[in-house]
Image 1 (cartoon, rainbow, N blue to C red):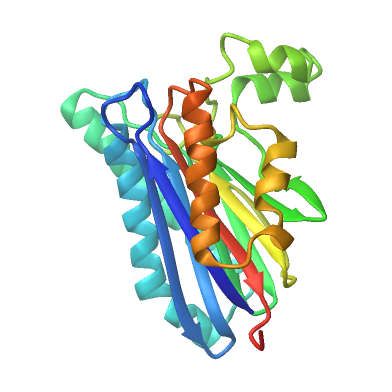
Image 2 (spheres, rainbow, N blue to C red):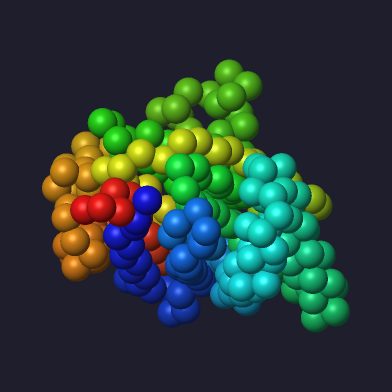
Amino acid sequence: MDFLIAAHTDVGIKKKINQDALLVKTAQTMYGKCCLCVICDGMGGLDHGEKASGAVVRAFDRWFCRQLPKVIRTDTASSVFRNQWRAVIGDVHHRLRVYGQKYSCRLGTTAAVLFMMGSRYFAANIGDSRIYMIRGGLHLLTKDHTFVRYETDKGHMTDAQARCHPKRHILIRCIGASETAVPDFFEGTLSAETVFMLCSDGFRHQISQEEFLTHLHPESISSEKMMEERLVYLTELNKQRHETDNISSILVKTVSEDV
């Protein structure tokens, strides 16, 4: 499998600092080309959100460069990725909490991680950054770790109530600021002509599912330049609709290697 990739980030219309952080890495392996994408949204209500998101991105960069080659040579079972990523996230979580205690501040960040190689994808998330898959329709792969999602799952509020609830931005799980940092993991089979979208919450609040499908459907984008143009367009559309958060996104389209 080969990949077309585009990424875009914008500070937005209100904040002075972009607390989002992105990572895209690719390499050739014995199983073909692999791709790692990470998007992190530093928590703006806390101190030094950009330090927290940057720490996670750097940690996964090190994993890709140092640990992945060893994994590929020995075992690519999903349990290996699960254990290593849990360790990466746990280590950053611990270091952020130690830093916060030392300097009397709280640091926190979300993380959405996607790795693709051969015919499989493996992913993890913690917080409310999301991963979508566009194939036929728009499919949300991740689950938000927010107060309103928890209450909705319990049947205490409806989706409509959650969208306008005053605590809709409150995270109950993240890296650095919560007591524990336990990510969710999931995996699946890769198919050609599929688009994966990773985004911070600022990229999705003002855009409808129908608009995402219209602009990001695999059949409508055929080059990385076109993919980047679509991300820029949707980012600017968010700003026109008065989104106040940082706005970040990554697009990956899978294509057959013989194309």
